[in-house]
Image: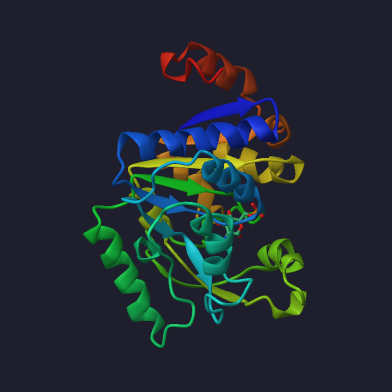
Length: 257
Ligand code: GLP
């Protein structure tokens, strides 16, 4: 894992979008793993503004609320269409999210896993960080080997996400999500976390012991995971100076500093 501390949210967001853009340019047929949430909105704005060629890309999103179809403005399908897919030249049939209104959820999850495998797996997986420590919707106690499946959402997540709903009480209490094991199979992972309210959980995710109580700690097991944060989200990390030193001394990051 490497931790890149950027001076502010804008810089953290820009670095994230640049890394995704680089992949799209170097491998036009890449498979991107995408995330939702407020943190990602600016990443998608920037990617759309770059006018890249997404015509050969395929995308798989992490998760979807159970009970919401793609026309519901709180569904993640709607979010993705609005924030990214409508603004770029991707073919909509190459964009996948789990179907939150599938008749048979178990079959839907197995189909989703098969589809990812048929496409050769995810080249870059983008992740946000939930206050419960979730990646995707892998709430506390998610097996570190888990695959795409149904998950009940925690109070912390409901508190975090329900204000986005017109009627907060309408937020679904269950979701379909890629598993921790599914996410760990991505060839490269980029997690973006910004703002003071992520500082506590970020410090646990990066510097704490690996535990199924905080799914994001599983990222420590991944051979190629980059965590991009702003100063606010980094504020409770104890080894900040070390991460900065590494960033300054890695030739890979020349041009990004
Ligand atoms: C939702 C998504 C997560 C995402 C989280 C972060 O819960 N299921 O994948 O990481 O939002 O949200 P925000 O960026 O709004 O803090």
